[in-house]
Image 1 (tube, helix red, strand yellow):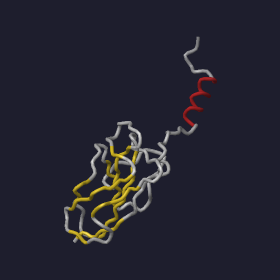
Image 2 (cartoon, rainbow, N blue to C red):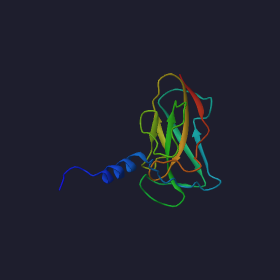
Image 3 (cartoon, rainbow, N blue to C red):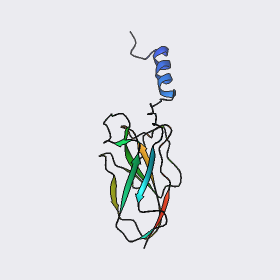
Image 4 (spheres, helix red, strand yellow):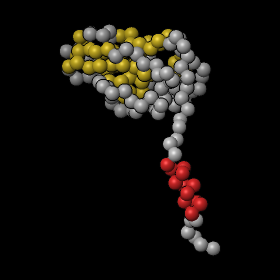
Length: 142
């Protein structure tokens, strides 16, 4: 018996590797509002400053916890192009995850103009469908 894989095995492996994998997205309840409580758009502030997250129509739960009508916050800082909305959100200095269920953060940004925007993620950091996104605000750190 040969130790070489047969053509059928190679075909199946290629099929699995080449077919796009889909991730289930969580449907968003109707009437949900995601927003930044403070600061407000146009504020001129000194750092560090607190950003408070607002959510109406759903609850907040830590990442990994599956509860109906709950999610957790992700704060986009100076992001000009929205991330892919059917995959887990990136996690870096510009895409901050609050998987512990936090509803505020103390930010220390450099002086200048900065944009802030929230995206609500499900238990797996995947945005709801349709995506629940706050209005983008701009603040100036003096």
